[in-house]
Length: 365
Ligand SMILES: NC(=O)c1ccc[n+]([C@@H]2O[C@H](COP(=O)([O-])OP(=O)(O)OC[C@H]3O[C@@H](n4cnc5c(N)ncnc54)[C@H](O)[C@@H]3O)[C@@H](O)[C@H]2O)c1
Image (cartoon, rainbow, N blue to C red; front, side, top):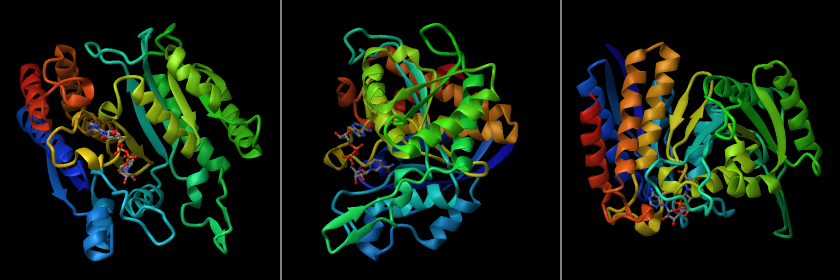
């Protein structure tokens, strides 16, 4: 049996509630499956810790994340927890981990689940993955922008050939493993940029094209980010894998989530060559925190992505099986559409959804 050390950062707002459910599901499924052992160690990090102790991510917690085989996170940040320059302190955790562990690819699957009503009138099939460049782009300036006399503020976009190549390679590798786009089954990677206006994005596109030339088995195309937002609503079946600069990827992945039922379903993985951090794409939803109504599905699916990533990395079929059980169980619960949280039109609580996922997993084990 393979053993993995998981650093768990529940975080702020709804973070602890949804992380509790995800870890309960993980423990239950891996114990019953029997082929994977997880050692989960919780760490206190985030805006709450910063408010109490003045530090959002201690070196001890950071070292725990470095040593772990994977990191599972709830949500970090509270709108009122800000540095004097106005930036939220959640970047002290999320950006430090992403940048210092070189988690260069933000992988965000978007999928219309059978059983859930589509927010889009035409209810088109949706099944694509947004791959967001995670450590460069405009957010690379997060602590390096300039502010002159409170009159002029600037941030500089950073696009490197190496970074663009790495994230684009990741996108093509992912496309090669998937079944293609819903429209015609064609494997395709789409570069989302603003190459018509900024030379930085034109450069991103040139590097993308060089990488695409090395993957003749996967088609490629380009879409400007403004048009992208319309296609995501009107023709999402044209996408298989999408790759974008950091800020564009941040924005289009939230829109993508909204087209299939909302942020409560939006799983995500931040991965590099050595480390992986798994967290829902949403934030800490402070207005519903503590009410027991947060949707835990995105976090549970992120936990399944973690097992899948560990399976790939360690050649461990048992971890892939456990991931498949969790993903299948979530699909069963959503398809039955009886135990859903209010964001999906239901009346169930966070815990009830967790228990329904565990019961569905039991039927698959
Ligand atoms: N990776 C992260 O940890 C992360 C990401 C985004 C925002 N944040 C932080 O979270 C805080 C709140 O940010 P925000 O309000 O812009 O975004 P948010 O994602 O927390 O909330 C946006 C909307 O989605 C709803 N929502 C989000 N997750 C939900 C869930 N699981 N179930 C049901 N509804 C859900 C919220 O109630 C709200 O209406 C801020 O401090 C922000 O910086 C953290």
